[in-house]
Image 1 (cartoon, rainbow, N blue to C red):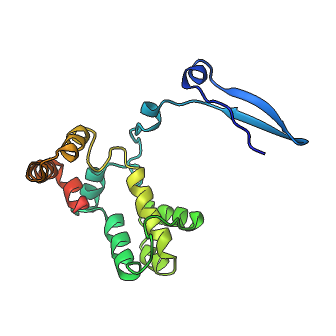
Image 2 (image 1 turned 180 degrees about the horizontal axis):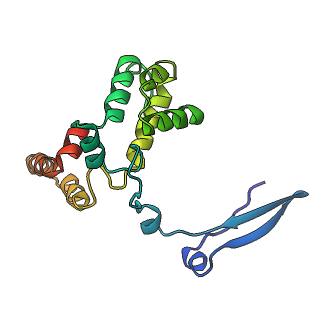
Image 3 (image 1 turned 30 degrees about the vertical axis):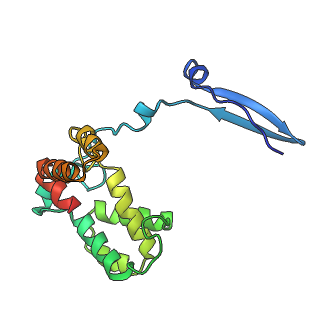
Length: 182
């Protein structure tokens, strides 16, 4: 049995929640839908955290660690390069959520045993932890300021102009962001 109904953004925006009960061959399905505009759902919220690495600006983490690239990025990339280069879809296949959360907690408290933990975990959990780190940054790696310029640069049709534009934009990034990207 297929059930189709139109989700109209304008209708959903007018109310906080849409709730309905659907009878499906004797099974009662309760459905709640809340509409959040794309602009709001993609907006990153500034972090109030001063400790840990997740949700903290890259520049703050690198300054605290006295490094050019956050420790979490170096450790995860090294482990992935050591064990995961033959894996298919290394950054696409999900790792075990409990392993990812355990690694997140270990990195956030600066656990010195994190490399031992990683060596015992599936490489997809390590890739998942790295992806989670970048997702939880309070500002994207390519920064809110430069994002529109990167989007315009990618749209250029002339390959020489595109390369020049992208290189100049990369070199304009804050040092920690650029070195982490590289």
